[in-house]
Length: 308
Image (cartoon, rainbow, N blue to C red; front, top):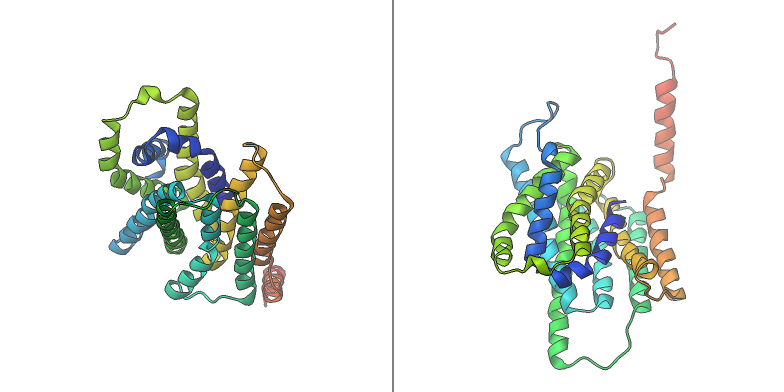
């Protein structure tokens, strides 16, 4: 649900990027979300106080997952093609899996690697199905596209780090409080540039529909997606969670086809099927997991020794 919502707001926020400067857009997003999540900041009595290590993780969760991801993604997509961006974004599950193995010492089973491969294959097919026709790029456009691709890959690394750090944070802090804290950090990071562009921007030029879209973007990007993601991360490994990032470009493509009237081909339908097969591989329990679950249930209902 979290990554599907990301795909929705990415697809529907294109008019916002055209109407509002990126840094001003990000600053207003964090500001609106801060008001919405003000009640989530209070520490529950069941949570321990934030130590130095946890504060550092919260900072990097916001810096990489909110601040740098937004900058790399928005500027990268504006410089390269959606085809190239789609192919590069398909690397998120693999990068997340590798980082979870290095930093969280999670073991990767064959099925998770197959799920990662299915996601990458599905996104590659999806991108091929959206390949535009036209003249060759000029040298200047080609150089610009290269830098755009580098920025999009930077967004991939930031998203993978967000997944891995989030797994560490959910062991000590509630999902709602994580969302509220990292949003405040993002607001602080974006405020200098946001104020700079706000003083030079004509707010009267933005129409009513764009303001409504901005509110949706803020609540979806900073509130809904983070809370949903952190809630899910409480119960599954980071490597397995990374597989679900394929829902980002899948949902964005679906929104384009259903609501923005973009063409939808048989090749794209095949891409959806392959990517969803990867999700199925990642989520269905294996034999060992199923047996363990059944044993646990049996232990719970079996009478204890000495009871009568």
